[in-house]
Image (cartoon, rainbow, N blue to C red; front, side, top):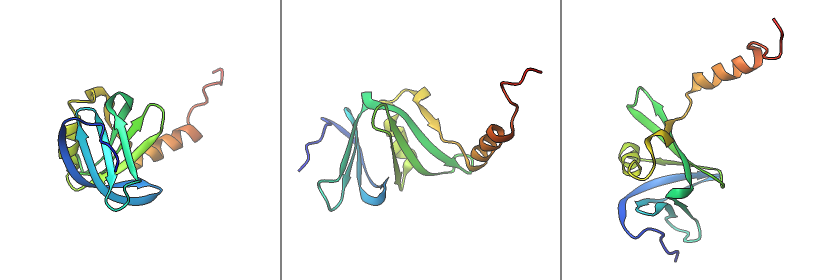
Length: 129
């Protein structure tokens, strides 16, 4: 069994991790970090200490009414995506440990399309007009 990095647990919630394949398990928010444990396979786990978290990204839809996914971007090991039944409650539990300027909304569908269009057909920065 894996040893938890937390000494105090604030929240435990059923969640889904999107790591190549979909993994179902539990997310634990505690005083030392963010942890995900797989329901059936004890070898599949994710432990992220709070000092390793760079950004917490939330995919917000319908003006904040629905958050289908959230992701944790680490300083060295990439981005981990998750989904939960009550993501607002989970993100509120993360707030005391991650600064507010590090909790951001991810880009929406039309924002991604707009950026791609601007990078492809936008003004050329090297032209001398």
